Image (cartoon, rainbow, N blue to C red):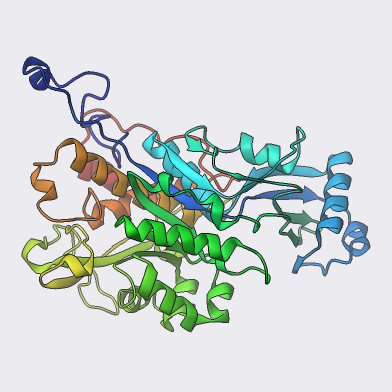
Length: 435
């Protein structure tokens, strides 16, 4: 596993050689294994350039987002494919994006649970999904279905207006029986999204999601919930607050979703309120940057060496050098917050914001997995004197998440297409991030 952040050395441990001290003693090094599990609606994002008449012919309100039936979606897709109007087609899905990015960053395995078309033609959505997903993402447990996976069409007319047509296909057809308990052994986190609980009556996806959450909690594996979009949360905020309080450890959201969940428009206050429900909160706030909030024990809190920041909570980043813990495992829990402005002030030109929050979450998951890996490999390390959730401080996790998110903003794809560039040899950590 790569270790999170851009550090002086590529690895902390000799990953290809045995430890010389253990070798001399005739002992075997402990075998460290970890991975991230995710449940998702498998779908592809399809961007096409179309004439005005096509919008009307398919009965789509221009500039709006419309759910269409599978038959109309199949006809639309075949026409776009035949007329070569598809500009790009990327694998999507909140959790799918996150697992792909995680595997690219960590150079390590993840396991995706969902559905996939049983019959796949070259060039179709199922084919695109498989070909745009990292080979380190284990797709062996996908449930085969007859029919297409989900498709989200972004139809761009000559005037630049974007009209969305969404077809769910069979993406919500994951049965609970296709969530095997074995995939949770040695896992460092389970990732789910709010979209999984918003299905039409009779779809098995919500039940499959709750089975996955139950299996993770039985094993003490952190459950991470991505809120997806503010509209889903605003429909029934009390349901989501109860679900998070009872079943979720970490919440990932943007400022709009945070307001829908907590009623607080200010992202820092939204994080503070969300900590009443979960143990840790990651909040992306557009041009403001991103926030990380959590708990640590008063005895191990660490003060920042950076300037104290003003805000709705004065000097809120005072203990940002602390590492987060579950609240229940703190003797005297203290709320800690960290914030970072956009990397390099943000890109000069943002090609797409789609997937930026998923990228930030993948960095957090990488750091959590590194912590599990290190705890298994060096169990006597002082870093594990307490049950911390991450390997790095909250400040460092913020910086890493911010850097990864930047990479997605400067490209069209919602998924990373490369690992982060290696830092210059000999550059210290603080100087690197201050560039």
